[in-house]
Amino acid sequence: MFYGTDLNTRLMLGTAQYPSPEVLRAAISASGAEVITVSLRREGPGGTGFRDILQDSGCRILPNTAGCHTVREAVTTAHMARELFGTPWIKLEVIGHADTLQPDPFALVEAARILCAEGFDVFPYTTEDLIVGEKLIEAGCRVLMPWGAPIGSGQGLRNIGGLRAMRAHFPQVPLVIDAGIGAPSQAMLAMELGFDAVLLNTAVAKALDPVTMARAFAQAITAGRLAREAGLMPARDMAQASTPVFGMAELLA
Amino acid sequence: MISVLGSGVVGLCVATALHEAGHEIEVIAPEHSPPPVSWLAGGMLAPFCEGESAPEVIVTRGQSAVDWWTAHVPDVVRRGTLVLAAPRDAGELDRFARATRGHGWVAPEALEPAVSGRFARGLFFAAEAHLDPRAALTALRRRLLAVGVAFRDGAPRGRVVDCTGIAARAALRDLRAVRGEMLELHAPDVALTRSIRLLHPRFPVYIVPRGAGRYMVGATMVESDDAGGITARAVMELLSAAYTVHPGFAEGEVITTAAGLRPSFPNNLPAIRHVGDVIHVNGMYRHGFLMAPALALDLVSVLAKEPAHAH
Image 1 (spheres, one colour):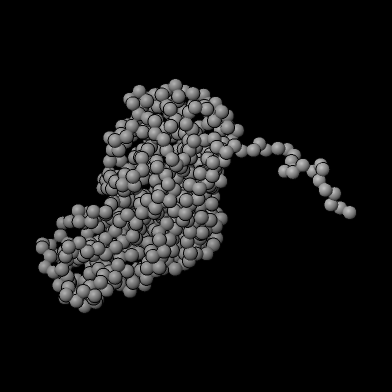
Image 2 (image 1 turned 60 degrees about the horizontal axis):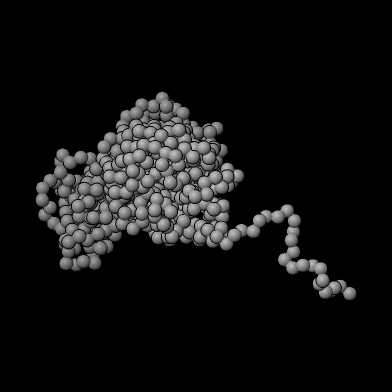
């Protein structure tokens, strides 16, 4: 499903901001995540100690280009990621604004085109904009990662209508909600809406108890996925009794 | 005879504790080795604040640090820690309050008139303290010299207690470096009297007064063993945070910038480890001044239980 890789768990976990690598490992384990993301831009080649711990987790590594503001930075970081981790997977982030960390869709499409042509499996961090999504697909991406809300904001799905439209517009493309998820209920909603997976970091890393929160997210995501498969009932404007009222025994004397 | 390797905060605390416990010791510290990374530390004795992300053991064991340092070096400033957040990050204060104890809500300007009008509320950790790392380590060294402890170069003559931080990586395979970057400002227009922590979702910083208008601003946390100089990004982040606390910092003179490597085990907790005949005291992470006294006393107990090696 994700570039030919099927995942049993629909939760992908970021690896920044944990109290310690040991807590991170325990959280990964509690979440059941099979894919973890790792940043490279700031750590550079000197981050081997931490990266070794991540690789020991047995998870598939999805390196990211967090912190890159230009096409060139993102492409260079992707090259470094491929060299360090030996994977063609790259979560492509090209940040448009340092304060909101919102993606720069123009640079994103350009970087995606370059990296797809070089054989990378690109996971682009994008907005819910349909046309940007189409351009990314056209550039060669086989997965889209729309934001729920700005990175680290914990606001959940800010534009539910837009995300529903995106799900409907790209029925065959794996869609991962990336960024902005603060609570398990929000992750569950994303799964109920039909998204294929959720990627989150801060909500777990900065919880007072990251390991327990990782478990909470795992359960919510499983529940949301099951609900989607089971078929949610439509919301109605009126009450509808579960049992017909006509023909019932007259109980009042 | 015990040979303590290293004269950073761990080496000097260990040497002091061992000497006080009656051991004969020497400190191996080559004359021309680079200054210990401890010199770059914040020097905050802030067990309760550290509890925001550190396990409970740091909070409980770290509390003894204030008294230990006060008993051993001059100029420990026991004025607590003031925790602030910019108005738009006010939620961070609530989270910090939930994650820690030993604090109360305060009007920041009541404690530090210099921040008047910029912060509606803050958290005050009254039991915390700070010191100047370089001055404190110089004082500890003088104490040891005064009682006749030798500081010398060359091969150790006694049982080795290795306190060399990240330099011991070859022997401690799970020790990794967490890079930290800091700077010092001379900003005589700013009058702050206690440690200030500014919470920020992306780059939290602390400001520690060093006296005479000097302030330490730190520190980044980067999973890297690159010991190169401070990055421009770090300078920008640290200074913008300092500016948020007090615009007067913008007129200050940058007198020092530096980067160092925090020796860290996977659980980010310091430990005493036996490797062959060598005892390592390492993995201080960001808790050097806070935890070195406790580790040094632990080491004394460890040695007391090993009669064959005690003398």
